[in-house]
Each structure stands twice: as structure tokens, then as C-alpha cells.
Amino acid sequence: MKRFMKWMTESFAPRMDAFTKNIWVASIQEAIMVAIPMIFIGSIITLVTILKDYIPGMPDLTPITTFSFGLLGLFIAFLTPYIVMEKKGYHKIKLLAGMSGVSLFVMLLNPMLNDDGTIQFILERFGPSGMVTALLVGVFVAVIMNVCNKFSFFKKGSSLPEFIMDWFDFLVPIALLLVTGWILVYPLDFDIFALIVNLFEPINVMGQSLTGFVLFNFVGVVLYSFGVSPYVLAPIWYAIWIPAIEENAALVAQGLDPVNINTFETFFSGWLGIGGMGATLPLVIWFLLAKSKKLKSVGKATIIPSLFNINEPVVYGAPIAFNPLLMVPMWISGLITPIIVYVVLDMGLVRIPSKVFQLWYTPMGISTYIMSGFNGLLLLAVILLIVFVVWFPFFKLYDAQELKKEQEQADQLV
Image (cartoon, rainbow, N blue to C red):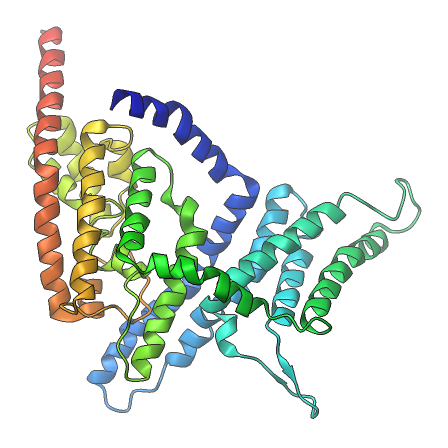
């Protein structure tokens, strides 16, 4: 264990931290994070539509979800190149990069141009199903803009106005991007969406299996326990989660049963994110009963954020990160709970989530009931009991250690 901790501390964690801070990776993460409020809108609409059961004649609000969550791909196509250019300090071209991303993305949607001048799009491709395409388009646009920004048609000290020189220099990357899109879509009749669906099918199949479901949670928990933000995996996670919940919602709308278990809700809002990634709320509650003054103080300081599934204060304040005594129960919870949740949902004992509900900060139990009803709450109760038991012996050992330290410090002061 000591050798493993040393390798993780001195080698793995620093490399992961450097990878996370890479401009390209950080830009993709930030683009997804910036777009999340548009997903939240869909979640809020989900909450509001519950009132339809009690208010006759309430208007249909689903178009709001369509033109927020349903345009996620479009937002990502703009944000990714924009943020890359911003982080690189190319402020003159960041807006052009974003607009070029939107332009290329829309062209690759492969719309049908009619003789009467109208144009037809497949609306589904603007949203979560187009997210991977949007990310690829965004990165491609950023690469071209980054390379072309290093060249200019004009020598330094030219008498031409700067904005004129900028216009001509910007024409090259924009033309290159749009000509590339035109060649792919029209002369070559290439459908990038179909290609990506085929390429991601094995990943999606694995992600919706028991193994994939457990790995998704466990890898994030392990990274977090070493102080590395699990959102380094956000591009992979969201590429599976968001289309999965969209497909579930579409199936339910057709009167069919949802089939995808691995959605964002099942990780955080429903059962596994009890107090945040790693199910840390039970530990915080145990801290409130600690004999150690330090741990009791940590419990008091972190209980409110933990109730809203925000656990950075306890992960870094207890600390759990780089603390083997608390990392181990976090890993155990990260393995046991997703197995139980997957098996129960797969057996049909609890309804598989099918509503767009990304309000992960909703207090425990509320989101669970919204997504899966009373049976979902029973499953949550079982998970809570298990996680409380898992944390308890490790908490007792840690509490005894901290209490001993406090007593020794008090004896030295006497």
C-alpha cells in the first residue's frame, strides 16, 4: 500500500494534474461546464411539468427544453474553439473561431436543401446526439485557427490599417474550414454523424454494461481521492450520459421502457452521489459525533454543502484526499454501490431514469423520488445504510488517531 501511495502521489497524480491543465483538455472541460446551465434549464422544466398532474390545462413547456438542452451540440461547437483561443491569448479571433465552429457544425449536420429555397435539418443532431461531433469540430477549428494565426500576408510595419490586415488574414482559416466541410458533405456525400455513431457504439455498449457502469463511478472516485478533479473525464462521461438520457426520454414518449442505466442521474442525483462523488455524506454525519474536536469542527463546517452534494470541503478539509484511512472506504463505496444500483435497476425493481434532470445539487431524496418514485427512495435507504456501515470503522480509527494527537498536544502545553 505504501509503494502504491508513493507512486500515485509522486508520479500519477502530478501527471494527471498536468494533463488536466493542458490548454486543449481544459478548454473542452470548460466548454462542457459553461453549457451545463442550458442542461439545467431542461431539469427545471422537468420539475415544473410535474405540476401538470395537478393543474389541468397547463401549457406544454417541452419546447423550452428543445431549444436549450436540445441545442447542446450547437453550443459546444461555438464554445470549444472560442475557449481555446481565449486561453491562448488570441482574443482577436476567439469570436471568429466560435462562429466558424457553428458554421462548420451546421454544415456537417448534412441538411436537405429543397428546390423551393427551404432547408430541412434533423433537430436531434443539434442536441446531445451531436455532442461528440461538436467537440471534434470545435477542436479541428481551434487547431486550424491556432496554426493560421502564426502567419500573415503582411509584413510588420505595413501602412495598411490593422483591421484590414486582420480581415485578410482571417479569411484563410475560415475559407479552409468551410471548404473542408463542403468537400466532406457535398462532393464526398460524407455523413460524419453516422460514422461517429458507428465508432462510439462499442463504447456505448460497454458504458451501459455493469462493468462500464461500475468503472465510470470507480475511476472518478479514485481520481478524486488523489485530489484530481474527476471532471478530467467529462468529455467521455457526457458523450455517453447525455445521449443515453435523451434516448430514454424518447423511448418513454413512445410508450416504451427506458433501457439505458448509465446516465448522469444515477451517479449523482439518484443514489451514488450521496453528499457528492464518493458518497461522503455519511462520513460528515459521523464527524458530527466524533470525539476529536477537529473532526467535529469539520463535520459542522461541511454538513450544509454536503446536503447539496458539494463535498470538496470535506474531501480536502478532513482530508480524504491522500489519506489512506479515508480513501479506502471511499473506494469500497465506489465499487459496492454502483453494483447494487445497476442490478436493482436492471431487474426492474426500480424504474430506470428517463427524465432530463441534471440538478445534482438537489438535496438527497428529492431527485430520487422525481426520477424513480417510492421504489427509488427504498433503494436510496438501502444504499445509505450500506455506506454508513462502510465508513464507520474507518471513521472510528481516524477519530481515535486525531483524538490521541489532540491529547498529546494538550499534554505538551501543560
